[in-house]
Amino acid sequence: MKNFFETIQNIWKIEELRNRILITLGFLLVYRFGAQVVLPGIDAQQLSNLTSSTDGGGLLGILNAFTGGAFANASVFALGIMPYISASIVVQLMGIAIPYLQKLQKEGESGRKKITQITRWLTIAICVVQAPAYLYGLGALGVPDSAFLLGKGLGFMIPAVIILVTGTIFAMWLGEKITDRGIGNGISLLIMVGIIAVLPQSFIQEFASRVTENNGGLMMILIELIIWIVVILASVMLVMAVRQIPVQYARRTASGGYERSARQYIPLKLNASGVMPIIFAQAIMFAPAYLGKAFGDSEVGQWIQASFSDIFGLWYNILFAALIIIFTYFYTAITVPTNKMADDLKRSGGFIPGIRPGTETSNYLDKIMSLITFPGSLFLALLAVFPAIVVKLMGIQQGWALFYGGTSLLIMVGVAIDTMQQVNAYLLNRHYDGLMKTGKNRKVAV
Image (cartoon, rainbow, N blue to C red):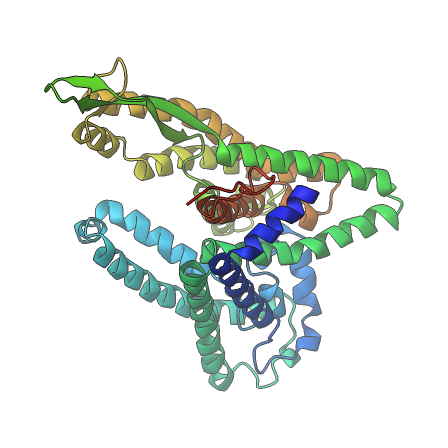
């Protein structure tokens, strides 16, 4: 504990790091404040049915968790940052097939700025579609017509759509400012803070269910917390796990010959795709329910709707896990360019011992990625369906079960590790022990 407080003191001593942390916290507070501001023209007292619809878990619970409760509050940030995430995914996938985007990706900083601008405009387009759908969908989620103080005419809809679109754009701006002037990835931090904001309420509901209803009591709560910590540790292992490929570089000597330099490594991540396969799979999982509605009241249609509308059901999770495995291979293939890695290695005079530079190196790296992606995809699929497992086997509340795996937990773990690594880099650059290795200050003469 003493070492922990010493590390906090070291962080506070570095003025630049201290300012970045304070700026980050300030922007996050602004975002959390906006999540509580209800849209003008809606009576906040009549949103209890909307809140109860999102408290029970399910797809609405996931959406509400990603927006930090703003979805259930019908707030100005009700759409959250997810339209920007969707736009980023679309632009990234389009970059594979559209030559113009491929050209921009190779133009360095100027190309990156143009891609960012395209992503922003696409975000606005997505918001313009999602905002009216959200407002009209409030009635289907149990919000009475009397909650709309100005009615549902154009006098309410047009300003409300403008406010929702502006809220998402403002949240996007906050994320970019956190990345530029704060610490960590701003967009990811906004999502993580939103998820964490829902966590206490979910835990309180689970605690009340176990204790007040005599449903296992404190002992069951303790068991759940132990399992939760184990799952977090497993998620950390998945995020941090790498396969190190040894690399050596030929170095020219004074006599004109070559000698081998010290061995280095290429780190290939076990889960190079992150949470993207889960996000893609969840987007696809909307399709079976709509397909079931297309069959009407037939026996097949009813079975499809019953099987794939419950995110904690058996058939839903079997298909969900299969899609995650497929998308893990797909996303890894487009984000880990083994051909480019082999070419860069060859140009820099590096080689993998026992493997010829060029095509053979590319094939070797591709083979290694395929081998390590298989267990990584299985592990990722298991984490994604684990909330359904704990609901069925332990009777955990659905809202609390969402934090036992899936996108929510992996985002929290991944963002926390990334932020800690950035703070750690500041400490090490100032000759302090990092967060990963606490201890006394390492004084180095400069």
